Image 1 (cartoon, one colour):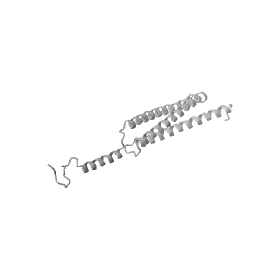
Image 2 (tube, rainbow, N blue to C red):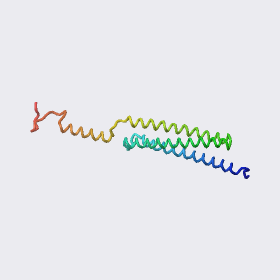
Image 3 (cartoon, rainbow, N blue to C red):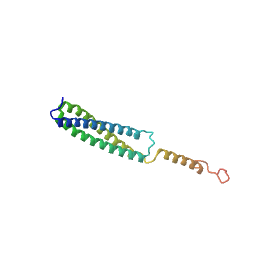
Image 4 (cartoon, one colour):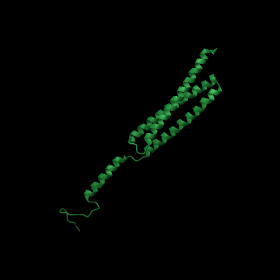
Length: 157
């Protein structure tokens, strides 16, 4: 049946579409952040320390945008309460609480990952191994830990 107040119905429908859009946007952003965070935190990650720091900074910025979307979600939620009533509000409020918990958890994990990267040793494992291999070779050539010999190869006493 046609609505007696067409502008209000259209506005209410737009509010529902807007909150659905924000809901999907937040879910998509959180899923993407978690996926990329898993890649950065892998022990066998091929990213350098600097690349990891940059990626975590980027992910923190993405989490801040998700938090902004959540704020817009809350504004739309208040409008839903006014226009659609408590039943619709309660349904979306539950989703809002889920989003809040998820975003907070992501931010905590990213901050922890950032500290972990900052507190990690400054050297890269591959470079460290190369350096230690070079050191072993050079100590062998210098004769450290080996009996001293003369120029002609005879052992000195």
